[in-house]
Image (tube, one colour):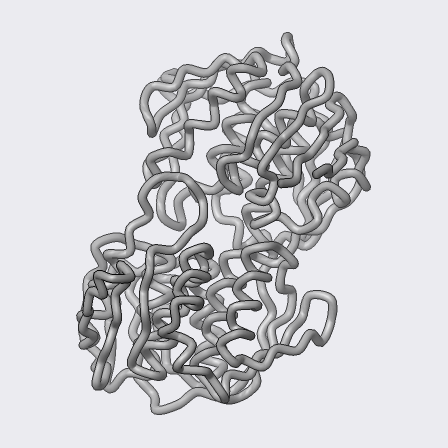
Length: 435
């Protein structure tokens, strides 16, 4: 197991460019299973979750070629269907959360798939009911294999229909779209997720010959086609990494420019930081975070305590609540964070409390942060990363702390952030990776 040793107290300055979006990469890479033709994807992040997914596709028989540092071509013309039902395949899927996104393409193209409980972050239950209900609406049947605790999904044919999703699940919406593009007739998906990465998936599928309308809304219409062809696609910059860099700039920055962020796809992320008093400038498609010697949390117009909560797009992504919470520890004022969508993501705050942060954990979903206005720096400590986003939040805390900190289980951070220590060290940080 690898760890980070972080010497806190260094000010970071310079320019940094966000990687390609992890969540989009997982979706569009799985979408390459829908055609026998070659699909080329650019700006793929070199991170653990994506690399593991690409490795799994190779074992399935997908021909993968690296054509540039972050660009690959995929051709799924000789899929090993026997391997898809093997114990080896099922065990690998159980270790990779992104593997769930293969179900829709496999069901759409081959009319069969096997589902096991996927791995990933330890952030509470992440149910698959939305996926299953959508597949059932399209005509799929589920057979529980008790000996392996898996579900075999089968369909003689998929037929388009109207469905109202029980929640605006991003992966659920992506899976249903990928199953529906090759179904007979028209599928209407209401209460669909509409994140930029879902929009990107729909645009890529349309470029492959699909007929999807209503993109960027929560009402999607998918007219089934008989086959899809190849295309060339470029992944958006990762909005979560952009938000993480804003948080770093706020806490320990001495002037940081974040390049090529795709401002129009960031939604309310910059405004969420501004609510904490963070000054942010924009220049073209770049974000500039000047040094913040002092920042005060806003209140609501009636003077009541600021509340920041997550919500489906275009609301605030839950992936940035951890980063915003850390930034608030050094602000002036108090703020209530309400993490609605996942039930265990706030449990990492006990580590921040050990570092000297003033945080009241109300319940698994809510925490009140009382900012100390830079009067008391966080103390260095030893901690372990429970998930990707808590991991980067703890790293930001360690960068701002007095002394030397250690973060264990950094494989969780590697799942979502490409070469993060070297990129931050180039700005002036002092982070060492050790076994």
